[in-house]
Length: 230
Ligand code: MN
Image (cartoon, rainbow, N blue to C red; front, side, top):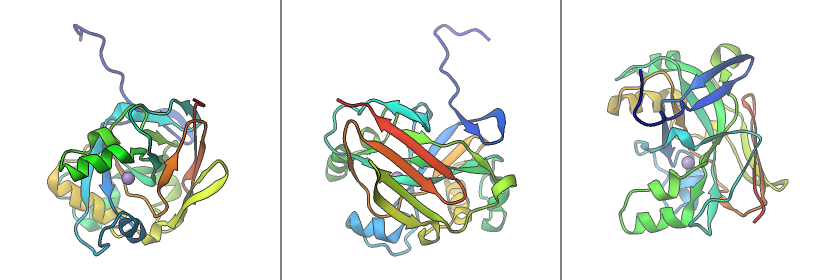
């Protein structure tokens, strides 16, 4: 095939234990999936159905990267999240079959220009400029489920410059991995390469140019990203 302009690069994530890559098709994100975080954002954490938004696949940056502080914000927030990596597609996937569709898991940051997101919410506009900006999705290598299984619990945290900011546990998720996959697949057909960022625990907060972020998820991995000094 030839193209009339340079073709976009396929977004990929490294995979632990192999040189082969995980190709990314879509990035889905769950809003408010930990009760404490829902409360800190001013919402009732009752078990209402999850809602979803997307980020662009070219926003992915590998762990260990040094990146620029994004433009047009004075309030860049970290959201540390378990990432589900889909290996087998489907629609209307039953909960009891959902884990069969998972290739593996990673740890990601859903970086958020909170000021732009807040403005969008207030004006009832879409969230993209708060969520879907360049380099807004640092991600670790994928751990195959064949190797680590399907995490049900595990400490999840992020430190900024060595100080804990977010600390939670996967067992605090309102919607479990299988329920999230099943529910999302009722709305859209999932395909291999789709990834789902499953929401963030309490403690979201700002970071500034020069900050070093260190994420940890027990049994899945460690994520580091540094913002270039101004
Ligand atoms: Mn998030």
